[in-house]
Length: 212
Image (cartoon, rainbow, N blue to C red; front, side):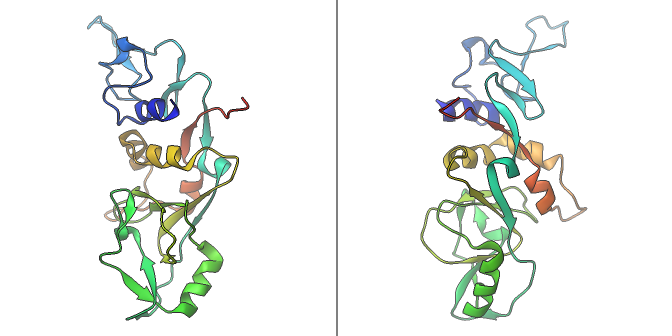
């Protein structure tokens, strides 16, 4: 149920699963649950019962808006440019975050020594979420393999045991709604980038815990 509502909130689900049937033709300007009044003379946006308007769009009334750093340990990879080697530890940059996964088909390698140094700042573990921070910003990947690699100019999100589910957060970060929200806040000119500070303070919908 969470994922159905989340997809609707994020704007990927054009059928708006989890929302009332009369919102299925919603105009997804501020979140797909915001709908145009049936009267064309009225410009007021309607919010279905059981939902509320927030800075991240329309969300269920019992959900909250949280900062990413409230629910996860948010870091970033190195900003150094180490010497590449022919055989070593894979070195992942923003260009390797594609289609929800880490693409190792076009990868460079760094020495074990450099990798050990970078691990002190941003060691990647299975279950972490990566977010591209420069160039094509906002692409997310869920780390689902036990493979050692280092990262550069990539956001690293480590969820705590009692935070929201990693798959929930990952799917939200992949949504059109989140990408539009992020693009409105990007820094830079020709080459867009998102800073670590901005990444940590990004707002997102947070469903209630089971205890709540």
